[in-house]
Image 1: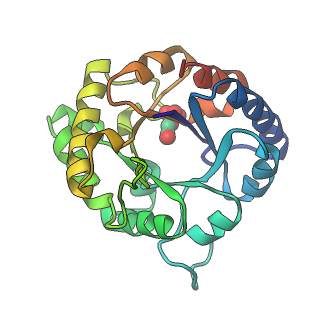
Image 2 (image 1 turned 90 degrees about the horizontal axis):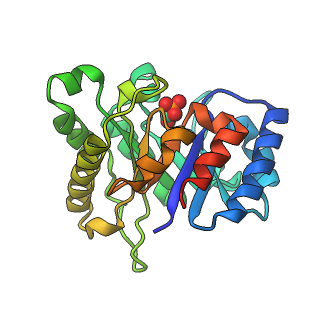
Length: 252
Ligand code: PGA
């Protein structure tokens, strides 16, 4: 399986920065066919970034979608609109949305379902808070999120590839510069794969679980070498051209 390197720009960036970054990523992704690179800019930059990535071995993703096809939902964007804008992926259930917008597992599951039905691959995020980890509840919390957020539409197709991706992002590691130990990452990824494969009824090997939270060029290679890590979801470091390109190069 290719290692996925996903850049989540969050609410950062502008046209000039996006153009330079997309051009670099387009070049770099060609040099590393063993990486599946995905850029997730803010919605308003999707169409432009899609054009700048045209012909390159990098895909476009969005940071969220609504669970309905259309309707009176001011400010929201549907999965089919994202598909039409050129997206192949959409992040759902990011901890920033779970906390700032009170998104529940049920809401995340509905979004993931709509994404799959619209032809997108949802990147379903899960992760425990520091308090939950300190209390020894990390697996319990993450297990519940995984079971609650994976939709019935999730499956592994004949070519052994699943139509969804999970991302383990400990909330305390996001933007903090702190990461779990490699053993802790391995343990949690193994756990997530086992819970998810049971939920979906597929072989564990086809469940892809990314790691996210303070990934940078200096730790990307170590993290991606951990058993069960199918790639990385990168926030802050995905906004820096050199840093993100070095993370892509770390797949080797
Ligand atoms: P970070 O964010 O890489 O800045 O820690 C990761 C994320 O929120 O997806």
